Length: 132
Image (tube, rainbow, N blue to C red; front, side, top):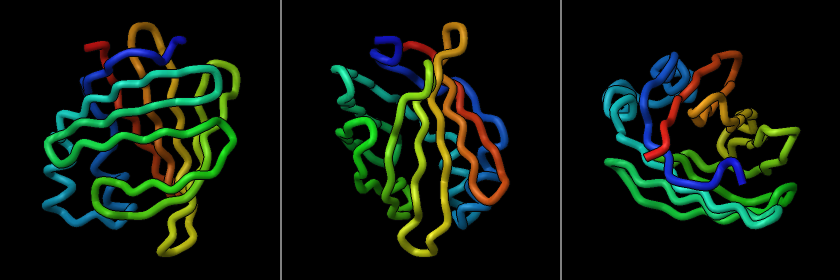
C-alpha cells in the first residue's frame, strides 16, 4: 500500500505553534521540534501497524480503520479516536481525554513525501517525512 515503509522526519511547518496550542511547555516544544521522528507503517487491508521511534520514545500502535482506539502523545496527553481512509488520505479524529477538545490529523502521500497535518483549536501544523 502507498503508506507502507519507513518515513523519517524532514521538516516541520508551524509545529511549535501547534504544540503551544496543545498546551506543551516551552522546553518540550523546543525538544519536540527536533525529535528525529521515524515512522514505520505496515498496512494489511483495513488494519495498520505503526511504529514510532524518536529521541523520546519508541511505541507501536495497531489500529483498524473506523475502530476507536486509545493513544497517548509524547507529552502524555491521552486521546481516543479513529482513523478512516478518505480517498488516498488517512483522516484521524481524536478527542482529548483531559478537556474533550478535538484534534484532527491527516496523513497523505504528496510526491515522494508523507505529509502529516494536524489541526487543533484552529492552529494547523504540517510535518514532512521522506522515505528512509
